[in-house]
Length: 252
Image 1 (spheres, helix red, strand yellow):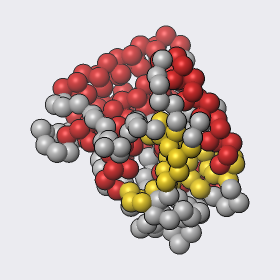
Image 2 (cartoon, rainbow, N blue to C red; image 1 turned 90 degrees about the vertical axis):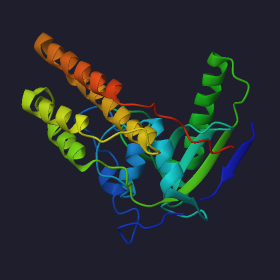
Image 3 (cartoon, helix red, strand yellow; image 1 turned 60 degrees about the horizontal axis):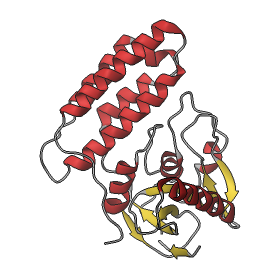
């Protein structure tokens, strides 16, 4: 398997040291499942604050709109792609001495950790090989690209605040007032048939999947019923928005 490596720099960071947040993130155990590799990387670099799932559509738009190619350096955002396809398969932050900050999956049991870059590339090369074998795909080479990015601009502050309140603790997710506030904020996101429609809906899809993952913390039949009803309302709102999320193609 041939490895293609592209190098890209971190720009417009808030902290003098782009890795100031890394130590506080390593080993953290979130209340809910949901935070994945993309969320961990962006939070570590100070590019977003919300603790939640980042869907590939949202990450795709973020990389396209707010990241630039740069020289390789500590603090760069690394992204693994299956060669020829725009989906961001995995992301990490470059640290010192050949190490990276990485998180394997969205489970709350998968802690952010330091690992060698070679180890991460080997792990996800094997995962992509398995994916190709199951799907009978021919292209199984990987691209590793490095990005430097500005702070995330596609952020809905009221929705983010409502999400933070909803997920403040395990029980707060199942409280009707918190759910109502979140649904109201979700419904008020302005989406029209415009150039930003697909990007905005990609962010909403991330929130929708974040809620699905958080609902897995349910205990007992009553919380099961509350979670199911809440997810149903989110799905109705999501489906009411025009357009569909879409990928940008990095390999055109």
